Every structure is written in C-alpha cells, then in structure tokens.
Image (cartoon, rainbow, N blue to C red; front, side, top):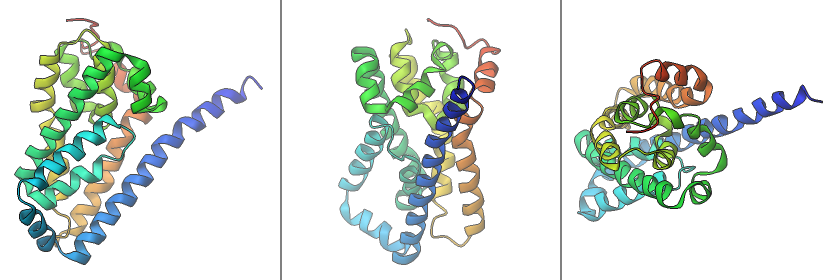
Amino acid sequence: MAKAQPQTSRRHSWIGPILAAVMFIAVTGGLIYAMNTLGTERLQQIVRDAGPLAPLIYILLRAATYVFAPLTTGPIQIASGALFGVWGGIILSVIGETLGGSINFFIGRRFGRPVALRLAGEEGLKKAEEYYQLVGDWRGLVVARLVLFAIWDFLSYVIGFTPAKFIHYLLVSLFVGAIPTAAAVFLGSQLGGDNQTLLIVGLIVLCVVLLLPVLFSKRIRHWMSTRGSAKPGL
C-alpha cells in the first residue's frame, strides 16, 4: 500500500496538464474553424466597427484569464494576432497580461495563500510554489518570465509571497514578457491564412512548451538555481 501512493500521486499530477492540453487544442481548433467559416477579414471588420470597445474588452478578458488562472489563456492570446494584427495583438496582450499579473501579485502580497488558492486552484498554485526560492530578485524574475511563461499567471501570485519589489515585477512583465507574447501573437496572425502547415506545427510546439514546467520542473529548478537566481530577497 505504501508503494502505491506515489504512483497514484504521479498519475494525478498528469491529469491537470493533459486536461489543459486538451482544452487548449479544443479551443484553438474552434478558433481556427471560426476563422475559416466566417473569414478573417469579416472578423477584423467586426473588431474595427466596435471601435475602442473591442481593445478594451480584450484587455479586460486577458487580465481576467490571469486572475482566474485555471482559465485557458493561450487561445485568447493567439486570437489577438488574427483580430488586431501582430503589433496590435502584442501591445494589447502585454497590457492585459501585466494588468492581470499585477492584480495577482497584490492579491498574493496582501491576502496571502488562502485567497490566491481560491482563485488559482490548488494544483496550479502548488506547481508554481515549487519555484518560490527562484524568483526572489529581478534576475530570477527575468529567467522565470522566459522559461516559465506558461505558468506566469500562477507564478504572479507566488511572487507576491516573496520580498520581490513590484517595480521589478512590472518591468519584467512589460519588457521581458513581450518576447513569448510576441511569438504567440505572431502564430495567431496565421489563423485563417494560407500557411496552415506553419500554424499546425507552431501550435504543436506551443503545446509542448506549455507542458515543460510540469514535465521537467525538477530540471528547470536546478537549471535556474545554478544561474544564481535562487536568492530569496532583494
């Protein structure tokens, strides 16, 4: 009986990532179908007709997917590239992510784990807390934003638990966070386009990258710690 528990625990640890991957594929597939059915130009015209309301709704929606971290965020970010263009999608996504992440940061700092747990969910928050000692200074934040971008929404709560300064979190979110965001938005700009092979390959790669923090958490923590980012304070 004692040996069966670790196997059960490992089996349960796979359920979350598998469900997240299935949800990501399903929602993204729905977006591709909508783009091909309605036409990218028609959807872009609807966005233009909405005026300033469309970007505002997208920013708030993107922020909400950060605060309520179990929500599927990837497809929404990808859609921005098709709806607002590459540069518009990047700018709006970075603003929404920074807004939502900042809310998470202050929830973690002001209310602690009990409130963060209700919003982020136990599994996601527990996974992010494995990197607690690695995000204490700005160098750790930079590495985490690039390597662990798939769980940055969860990590934003955890960073609030650390002594990290908000100004460092804000600057890293705005400038370093633009790198993975730009890649996802560019991929989304191919929705409804002619190069569907590039889109499919890109989505597969993105799915694999999203699972890396879960599948290789020990190796990532070791790699980050060997680069001097495991300093608990500033």
